[in-house]
Image (tube, rainbow, N blue to C red; front, side, top):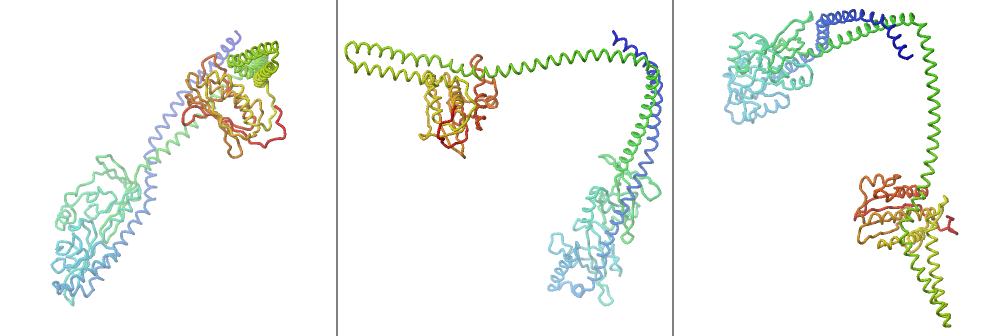
Length: 629
């Protein structure tokens, strides 16, 4: 009843705080709405600022790209005038049918192209017909082709330097062509042209996150790391430009399709945003452009806009989180203030309630402590009883083993007893008849029978008694013999064949004689249990010495052990026998006994069938006296 009264008082005190909390909720909601609106208004400005920053970062890449292209063009531009000065070329132009000179010039041009790392070098006569070329060995040789329609030829034959970029009509490769006139005296007899390809630049651009496009004055994309953009137009094309392309066969006309793009200025730094409306989705870029005046090219670098958008979104998200965090801190401070006021108002009443609750809880704790002490004492008593019970179970297991052998032992004792009785009656008869020698022989036989029963009784007494903990050198062969003597009746009753392959010379190991005998008896008993129901049970006992240790192996021909049985074979109270047939302590006891001897007991399945148990013990030198057991 006191707890219910306290809860009602607490709810009553919390009433004003809950009302003030409801008043605070609309304020928090309004602040969140204002922050979201501010974020929406600030996002375009942030995106623009980050986009300009990306453009400024990539401007150095654009400048480097322009310089590399310009350098490649400048390097190739000086080659045609130098080649035109070769006397062999001038002689060939004067005598194009010279069969001895033509192969020489062809090979000379091929070697020149290889050494200068250019695509093609070729010589045209005054009509534009190619009479020698570095490609003379290839299937797409320029020899015999007429290029009079190309502007670089017309410019060079007129006495100037020809320049032109186009898709090769013979090779099918894009290239930039430079040409220079061959002047023999005062007459222009032909033209030397050099073609270079710029595919390596595209391969380099492809490794970058940016996209590079090179447009000519007709807005045709001639170079780009986007293969699908080759020969696409990026802007309007004049009719005159299209006619010139058709006349000079500069590009494939069918490929001249416009790229669907929307462009918008970005700040005052000369940047633009470009959005391509493609069938596979639109992509937005930041574009900036530079010029290569000599070639009439505009080089543009397109940086993806997505990072700027992501940065802007992340910045706004961080700003919103910070603002939300500040708002939450303010709300928490406000709520703490309300709670503090409520606590101050109800402090006196709460103190009285607290003292009552403390007294009540103290009484409960005292009662709980008393109960815990009783449980601890009961647990201690239970553990002591468990230890006693475990010791009794160990001895009970041994006595149970003796009980299992009782029928066979009865047979073992009944035979000698019957013989003793018969020999005694015969001795009395022989004495009555005065046949003392025969009577003495019967008495000797009675003594032998008595010794046999005494030996059996000694083995059973030694097996049943509680062994000492003392360990020392023991003869392993004698211990096995003792165990076989104890288990002899049961082996005979089960009609089991036991193969004992122990060596004739005795080996000494570290252990305790009685406890080691108990282990061997247990292993033999388990082997007999495993073969119960077999017509011809068989047990093999063998011995091996490896690395200073003795291995005693006991194998049966039963069904072997399952995976679960192998994993739990030495766990206490684990047994595969039927209920009432065993306690599951034999192997656990044996395992601990062998471990006390600094040995190891293992279980496995033999490759030929059946279970195999191995007792591994340390070897010892033979002592002067057998260690006391």
